[in-house]
Image (tube, rainbow, N blue to C red; front, side, top):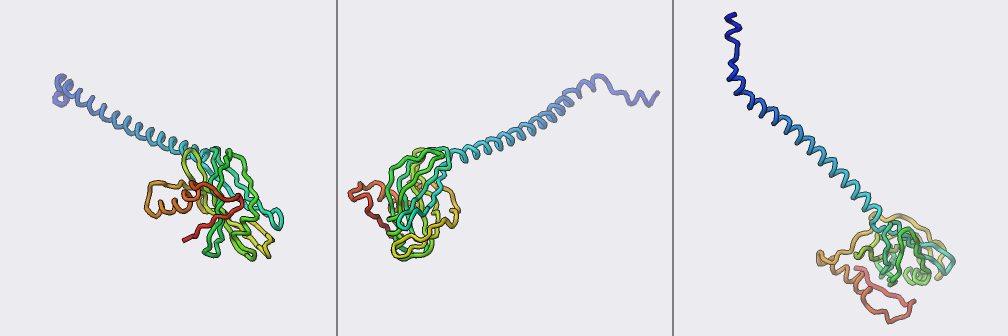
Length: 220
């Protein structure tokens, strides 16, 4: 009995410990709630990132260019808009990859709705770019407007064989390694210079020549 009497805790002392115990319990549940909130925020951020990525995949412009032989003197360039966003085609560029030669430029102002294709006869321009005797790769790239911004595709390559000014074969070879990229107006000096030579100079000048006239720019 004396032992039990010594272990008894006064009621007033027990009451004084209640706020301390309540503080500990509140802190514990606060930590648990904070961790749950952080996990919810992380899950929400991941969901938003996935939704944004899906949105960009659906609405980002994406063009596919294919060169197709029709006859010995005729060839078509087929541009397919793989995205949902409508674009405005501005400039088609052709060049040979095996030689450091100028490339052909064709000014355009044609709209292309998402999911549709645009076709243009380019036999004379292909022969003008390759010459009367050529065998090797040739590439095409397109510059266009989408949602108020200017974009440029990568070079789509094809293997072409030209004999005596006649197109013998024209077959797609490889897909581009990059998707379309935006042409920056504000950037490094060399990028601004490339923009001025490759796009703006040809796109803003009034056309005073015939439709079949060729435009050449020397590649550095």
